[in-house]
Structure formats: C-alpha cells, structure tokens
Length: 350
Image 1: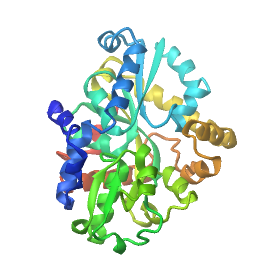
Image 2: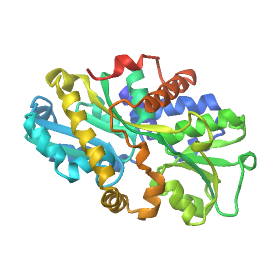
Image 3: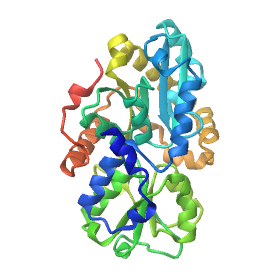
C-alpha cells in the first residue's frame, strides 16, 4: 500500500489539471497521505534523521534516543519549539532517561506520516488531517496532545482575479494536498456547492506566491501565517475558515504505539513539559513572537495575527479542540478521505 502511495508522487502535474469532483479530490487526498511533490525535501528530512542517530534501526531499539519530527520551518514553533529553545525539553527528558533528542523537519504531514510508518520517528507534530487519515488506515499511533486549535486556513486569490467564491467557477484552485488547508478547501467547496465547477490541484506552499503572481492558479488555500502575509503583499482574501463553523484546524502531536510500549509513562511526562512551555511562552509573549517570526521568516505582526495565544493549549485535550477534531474526523470519514472511523478516546495515549 505504501509503495503504491509513493508511486502516486510520480504522476505528472498535468494529471492534476483534470477537472476534479469533490469525490475524486477526496480520493486524491487519501492517496497523497504518504507522498508529496517535495520528494527532495522529504529525502533530506529522512537523511537528517539518520545523520542524527547511529542508524534508524539502532535508534528504534534504544529508548534513550527520542526522535521527533515536525512540519514547518527551520525550527518547530508553539509549545514544542519553545520547550526546545528554552532548554525545558532537554532538561526534563534527560530526567526521564533520554540522553539524545533529535529533530527532523518535513515539508508537510504526508511526508512525516511516511517516516512514522517506516519506523524512523517516535513522535510527530503535524496537522489534524494527515494524522487522522494515518490512524484511520490502521497505523498504530496514539494522540498525545492538541497543541493548537482553531487554526485558520485562508483562500487567497491572484491579483486582478476573482474576489468571491462565485467568481471561482471555471477556475483552478491550488492547495497543499493532505493538509488541514486541503480539508478546509474541500469542505468549503462542498458547502458552497461549487466543487464540480472548479479544478483542484496540488501545490506546495513554497511555490504558492509565485504561482499566484504568474496567474497559474486563480486562488490558493493556505495556512494561518501565509494567508495574512499574502494579504499584506496585495493578494485579495476570498475566504477564511474563521467564517465557517468546523472548518478551522487543529495541530496535533502523536507517537507510535511501538515507542509507547517501551515508554508507557512518556505521555504524562511529555505533556507536563509542554504545559510548562505553553505557560512560559504566554508569560513571555513578546520574546516568543520574536522567536516564532525569526523561525518562520514572517514579520512579527503577521505572526501575532496568525498565532493568537488563546489558541495555544495548556492542557493536552482542550474541549474546544476535541470538538473541532471530532468534526474533522467525521468529515474525513464521510467524504471517504479517512479509510475507517474510530473513537477519539481510543486514540488518546494512555
């Protein structure tokens, strides 16, 4: 199954230019759960894991080594990134017996999923959609924490292009498939009943601005920070998930069951560390925002808009985040994006 999913990544871009119905787009989201166009970035990420440990096999059998993967910029952000930067993570995990902690960056959730399945990671920080789809496939992961909730996705148009959803009919819309932004876009198209009138194509976020500038796509469904940034650059905002109940995302931290079988006390200890880090970043918000901006290369004012501290969870499973996560899971299952349904309570790491 995994090799078949990887083969999907070699399909030429022209194939994605076919007009997609909601159901076809949903199938493609499922298939891209373990692949992406950013193959070179994925390969570099996996090499980084191997470079930081003697070997992936040795690391998986050595419970003094903790291998964490994350989606995003040069360093993780949020409570996990802050715990790393402030030394909280290393200090407390050493007390728990971890002598070496490695981090590997991935361009998107599907690539991180691939590393989890391959046994090259113990813990992953990623968006809700890829995490749910992986679990629904029967892969043995456990949910440790909702690290952020109400994460906004944005639909940004090209300059001098469509300004409303109605004007997108007959146009091409891009997004990073397998992401929470993709889930938002599919939900939006279904809600507004224009799915059959648009083409949905895959495009990594690193290529979005240039594609909009060239007019290759009429609009791009993008992340919480890139949306406000593109707006500041003169690109019109057509819509955002904040305008639609249940279409905003959550950021999750998961671990493999194989790892937790060796370290059953890890969820409690790890969550205690991240709760401390969440409280500390809120108490030192200006310092944190400077760090977040430096890491993502966006201006501080953009980061403050995209990352309101009320979205940062101080507890592992905030009720509002759980409600959003349940809604996302139901949508993915109903649309055929998630292979099977499961109970969230059964997914939570014990």
